[in-house]
Amino acid sequence: MGLVKFILSKTFLKQIGFALIATVVLIFILLQWLKVSTNHNDYITVPDLTKKTMNEANKIINESNLRLELKDSTDFNPKFPRFSVVEQNPPAGGKVKKNRKIYVILNPSGYRQVTVPDVIQVTRRNAESKLLAVGLIVDKVTYIDRIGEDMVFQIKHNGKYIVPGDHLTKTSKVELICGNGKKGSYTIEE
Picture 1: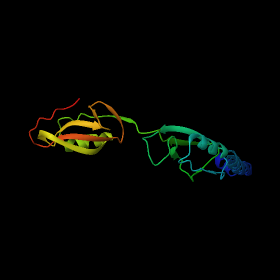
Picture 2 (picture 1 turned 60 degrees about the vertical axis):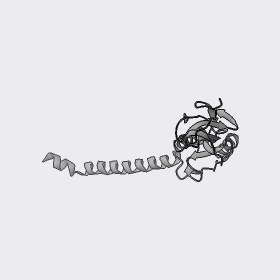
Picture 3 (picture 1 turned 45 degrees about the vertical axis):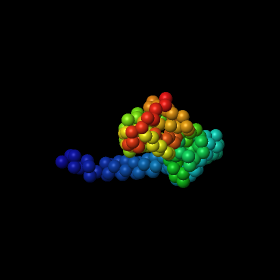
Picture 4 (picture 1 turned 180 degrees about the vertical axis):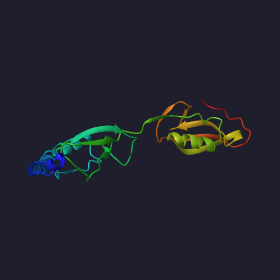
């Protein structure tokens, strides 16, 4: 019985009331402090950095009170200038807080080098698939008198004979020298 009397007493109820009021005031003060310290509703619009050089992007980012971070470079994209921003995260137009990092990916100076696959003594169709898979373009097919019809005997690039394992720039154009199915005395050049 003594516990029920104590809980219903004026002193206890006053203390509970003061505790509730103190909690509400403390929560209100904490929320106001969070708004100020986290810059609530104070956003910066991310500028568009695409096709800008690293120096131009750095200048724009510094003026916007943001930070720039180079993430990586990607495969060469001919639609963008060399060493320019190809992609950024967060994207242009996004809303971020002050001093946020903007990650960028740069366009390299050109296409990378690829290794010419071994397509000698395979069919033209298979050779074209293998060359295309590594990024080389079959620009021309020349036929010679050899018994293997549509079989690749040699590869040329810019008029020079190349062999499997050589390195060419990606998107280079090559010429395939294939047999036409007729017996002949054509000699293969090195």
